[in-house]
Image (cartoon, rainbow, N blue to C red; front, side):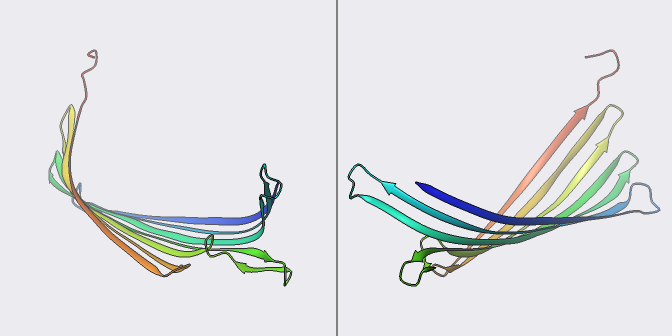
Length: 196
């Protein structure tokens, strides 16, 4: 038999800011797009359960109380600069960094029949953990606009750093770095009217 209850509260907030500028020379532009996301979640729960097996003397039971808090945010931006090569083509430079951080604190306590409260911390179900993820993309592209086609070619370098820190039930740290170089090419051709 299981009896459980939960009470959770959460909120999220986000913002966006865009700035664009066109220079005197046609095709030369600069833009920056910044985003912010924040989340905060808290919850409390209560669980009573009893497990009865075929043997009447073989059963297990528990009374638990839990509380969890999760807080996090993401900061990201995208910078773009375009420089005309001639009337039909341009170079595009991009840089997009982002940072995400999340912290979780979960505590589960068992009922103490001696004191009559939930004072027995269950370390196997409790944890405190924080992780951070930084990523950036840097790219350069060449765009060629023809009468019936658009050609885009370029390369993008991606870098990411993932780190984590645990304080409970035991202390520990993790760190991983990833990087990659991604070439790309895209060709779009517009068929003339009346042709498939």
